[in-house]
Image (cartoon, rainbow, N blue to C red; front, side, top):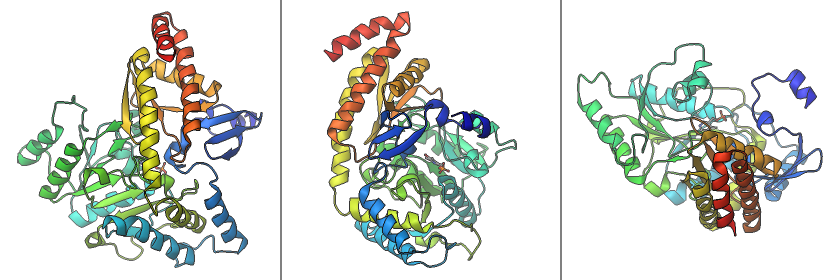
Length: 430
Ligand SMILES: *Cc1c(COP(=O)(O)O)cnc(C)c1O
């Protein structure tokens, strides 16, 4: 830790939130250099949907490396890339009747978003993109412009332009139809808002506090985009790859975005890999018009293909997500009363949104001491965000929720006003 403090920039974050030195990891478990074991309910912010070091993926990776498989290749054709594309077609695109083309924009999520923004502007000839309150899309300038968080945007140091912010579903209260508001803006030739190149959204805003867009809202937005000749872009970087049950988070709503961004759990192993999916007709790129050195990392292709074949050949994982989700939601609902909180989420992205933001932060801190890694999200870090690997077993989930409940008890103990809630929690627990 002393080395980290001496040498690593002040910009570091998670090593402050979870101040220990991690050395090993397997499945849902992380271990530190003192031998203490932690249940990982953070899962690399959604980059570890299949847990740490999954044995099937590890085997595929080891074999590829042992065999001197190509590791770096820019975007040359490699066997690993072809096997990934074929697996993606077989396990993701074809069963869903989707005919996207796949673009490799660079290794991280923000690269996928930048490519989507660039392409949407290029094919529509329009400059403005509509993004939503509390959105999170990454840290490079284009992605930052469509992100909500003021601190992060201020760090850009330059004006972030060509974006119009619209209220996300529920932002103005559950009963206010924010699509109707957008409809009237775009119908009015003197509203000051021109038709955009694209609407960019997360179907469940993850960093933004686990805000779930409802199906009718998503459908109405897709419909509005079509009528305006604007593209619908879904950033499925955190809540795709099975997080909400189906492979894509938008499947349940029955919408088909024009462009989809995927990254985080795509490689399945925590290796960097991002793709931008585009409707075939939108493929207006000139060769090399958007490029980069690390577009398609072969070891990530290998683990991604293995993950698609292993987890997405049937509905086992989707069913497991639904079952674990129901179990976790039930336990969170019991904690909600004593915490003066609301339970949110879909699948295995669940949030305990506390009226008192300091309570959420204290719960996360106590959870860490109890051997549970869990983060907060939202404008005021007021939402305890449960993001377990999708492969978590029922007993591990129960153990983690026991630890969370203990952390809630300790957090409530800390302030006199909360002690009454603590007694209610004891009543609930017994
Ligand atoms: C994490 C994330 C990004 C950015 O991905 P990076 O790999 O950190 O660049 C973009 N959008 C969403 C929804 C994310 O969760």
